[in-house]
Image (cartoon, rainbow over all chains, first blue to last red; front, side, top):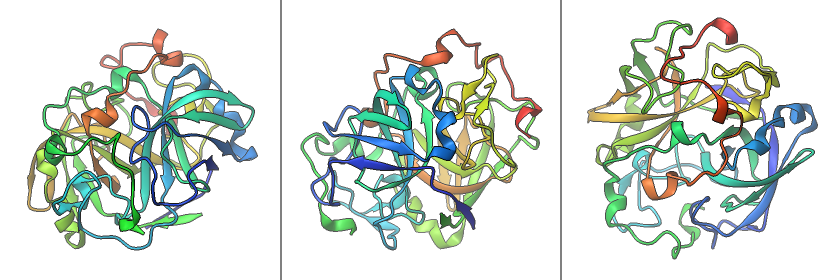
Length: 157
Length: 157
């Protein structure tokens, strides 16, 4: 077991878990920003040089977890570690979002899929040569539904 | 502040922080496996259908953090949130690794860059249409060094 401190908070247009986009960059049209706590402000230097970043956050509204569940884009039960579903043993979320600008302690974001009020654990730059992987197999997702047309519902509340 | 439980542990050929590859998939030739604790075993169902996964882990050997630091691939001080350096406000690591197979409670991995003994927080599938982002700007990294030729050193101990 280990403890982490929040480094900031999300401000977004998504006020409830239902009807949210189910992924960030390339899928969502959502806007918002992350406000980084003053203590960590200096760590934002140079971030604006990147067009995208990873946001690692606490899925703070999620209670409990299931080892088998139906992801939003499928109708079969899948192992939780083969899905992005939020009801996980550790309620840790990972999104890739588009950076519009960095203004003082705010990272202004496009293509965001994160609930308003979400506490932030870490920000890391998306670096194309590290992160653009040639993936041969996309598992159950290959016969899945169009993620731009599917919104979240209440199944993971 | 929030608490997370470890879900498993890394077994790799990298026994010290020095001389490790500085990224995973596409960069590292390292091999190893993740052993998932029995309690969470059922969550591995369907993971083998994916060629790559994200591993979110606790950088458990890292003490303290710096808001400005020199990443392995650069000689200038950068804001920590614009780098992948381990000395972060929350010692959370993120790697993309290649899945060789899943055998009972073990995920056998290639292209791994994770220290032996590292506690695991989460596993998520790499899903190409979500994660292969068209990134226009890669910040300081664009004039950086070749990540295949640079190994870690002791700077973040």
